[in-house]
Length: 382
Picture: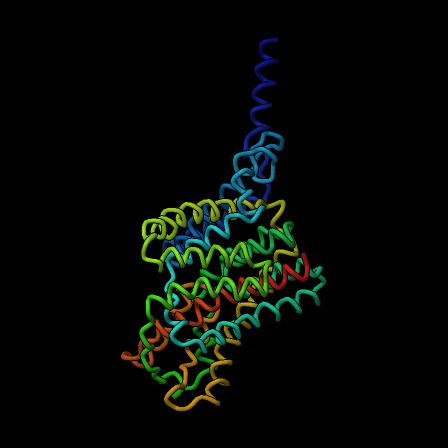
């Protein structure tokens, strides 16, 4: 009897282990997670994003017997509680608060026409939306997928949590993956679309923006954008609030907390839970492959649209006010990474041509533009 009891307990323990419950799909996702961590550490591709996401993929794909409140999709588990910040969409507004608190909008205020470049880059979103519809996705699912083209992970999570929660994991991982791969994807497109002469265009230094203008901007920006697209209020409200904390001059401590400690904490939790949501049984589907394809296509269209718009815009600008098309890629809202790519490209062709501050104009405009685009899609489809 004792022997039978011991054998039964050993059998139960064995059936509880990950070794017993492991499937080949778990191993595939674990390899993907290790690859993300390798990219972050060895290639330094957005380590602040890819390390938490990569490790989260490992966490989410440890095999287990269901019913023990372990998995991220099991109601009441710790991971499920943390994942509420993603599924309910309250991590993204907190990230936007931090972005607003750390972002200087001076480049865009000094040269408002750069907002048009940021707006042009949003064509990637609507182009991918139409293709997603053609591939058989429902309109709400297509919208969640298309927002990947904005190169804005928090916006993609926010919109997909409202419109297509069943695709949230794939959309979030796709969005952050392509954000991390900005240095790989964008430079070839920029070279393809520009001539040597265009790459050597030097832009005049931007005018100095007064402190009063910086204080007025988040207030006016909030009223203008959210009166038109109220559904973007959770994102834009927090973005402009964070920026007011930064520029008011009297809430420096709050701005530092929002841009440093709060953003770091939320980024860690968001990255880990987004990674963990790639549980193989939920993630490895034909739709996931389509989502990654559409996300890549949206990102390419957005980069193409931004660069090409500058080229067209230059046709009507006087010679002394022409824009360098290399800043067009910064219209996607991967801040400040896309602007750095513009600057690196400019320095490659002319070591004295610094484009960073000019590229920050369309880059921060892209943040606002992607949130507005998300609000438009949410308003129509919710």
